Length: 69
Image (spheres, rainbow, N blue to C red):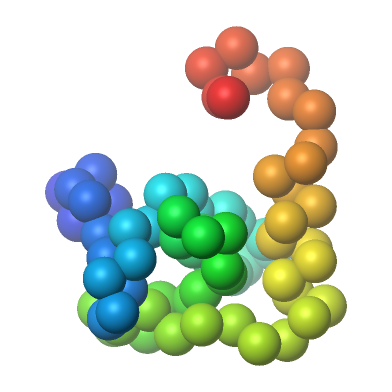
C-alpha cells in the first residue's frame, strides 16, 4: 500500500498522476494523459485504443464524490 502512496514515474520519467480500476484490471495515467498498465514495478504503455478510450471515459464521468476532482 505504501508504494501506491508515493510518487511513481514511467521509465522515461513521466509522473503517474492517477490510477483507475476497470473490472479486475488497474490502469495508470501519466501527466501527458497516456495510459499504462503495471507489470511488477514497470509501467507499460497501452496501445489498444479500445482500452485507452474506456480508461479516459472514466475520467470524463461526472462524480458525486466531493473528494474526487
